[in-house]
Image 1 (tube, rainbow, N blue to C red):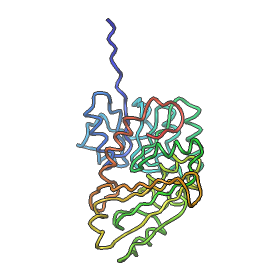
Image 2 (cartoon, rainbow, N blue to C red):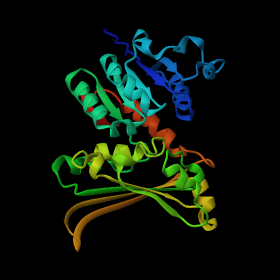
Image 3 (cartoon, rainbow, N blue to C red):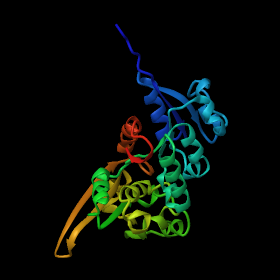
Image 4 (cartoon, rainbow, N blue to C red):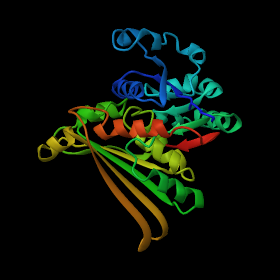
Length: 287
């Protein structure tokens, strides 16, 4: 009788913030996964929290740990610097897809993933309906897409000039940005990964034609809601004219801790994405 032992999938985690810590803990609980390594910008943050054998001091030596999947949950700069070399060794899940708003980075990674044996995986995060958006893009029926994110001002982590605009929000809601996602990503790289994932799903529109809107709302009648949740609205536009057009609107209420950048539901979403990031071959895939 043949008895085949299924090989555990080795996963390397890049970044040990809230999501990275959560994923590491989940990997260590499972029988089908094995922790390959954990890297963090400051390795001291890992001491006495995880076993030293898992700590990777120098990210450039990641290949020595023979990962099957590398998961980035740190910063878009990781993809810019290491994305191509990661794909030489393993599948790569890009937790900060705002990095791909840079067309040179996106083109290089798409080429690398399509010409090699490993794939790029984009987690859905808080994007609801990503698979359906991609299906419409595949057959050319997706005509427009807009993602609107509403948060309390304290929940945004922004670069200039949006940072100053957000700091000046007083008593009324302010639209900080409304336009192409490509231009928004470098201004809010930590907040709009959902929008970047939407632009990648809507590949016939891309980063230039997918629209993103962020709203800072400090009003007292909604403050308890927005301090404890992130509101994400997705508007999809299909064939037809203004009087008779196919449209879908979804509004996601994602609970979050006060002032938190990441909503509670995002943790489980990232775990599901990580578990599904395999066996789709070369190319770019939503997960």
